[in-house]
Image 1 (cartoon, rainbow, N blue to C red):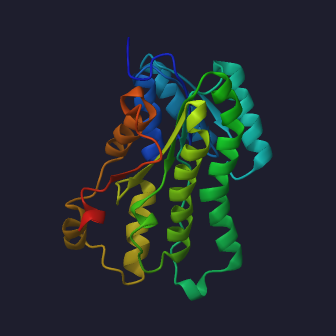
Image 2: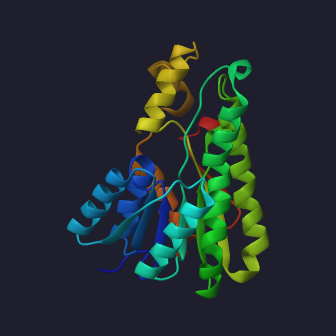
Length: 255
């Protein structure tokens, strides 16, 4: 089988479920050896098993990607299993939705750790091996929330703004070492994360009804649609795309 990621080793953080799970399966179907790094070991193991049952190659590694020690162990274990990563999909992340004046310092620090520090730790752990292997592609999950603010999401929006610039800055610093880094920026997507976001926003009186969703982005997106965008950025099909933000939002941010 020949695919767009043939002979590649891909690490997918948050790769057990949702958009990350869809990407893990798609990357494997396109020929990559996939290391799923996720704090949910049971779900990560199930996704890896599903990939193997379909004829692909995958292993699961349990880690809290905001913890430097756990990230180091997971990346080292993935390297021992498959060799150095030439694709990194920094997907892991979560959300806090609440009024700004009710947001605690603890929540502020925690979400920045999960959404931003994780990108720093994963990228720092993977880059030396990727450079030694001759280069590779890093994809970071940003969001429409990096550029389109939403009430009750000051904290989340701020973390995604950081991810937006992280991807661009890594691209600039490491371009001459044959490293590309881009961000994929989903709109509202039909995942547990996305559906919880909609429900929480509605609870606080923010209009994310079906009519509002239709006006903003036509319909809710599917996780596979984001995975295909991440595949493009991970593969050599995007060989001259570097430091870019690819919005997967059906014109949400264009209106």
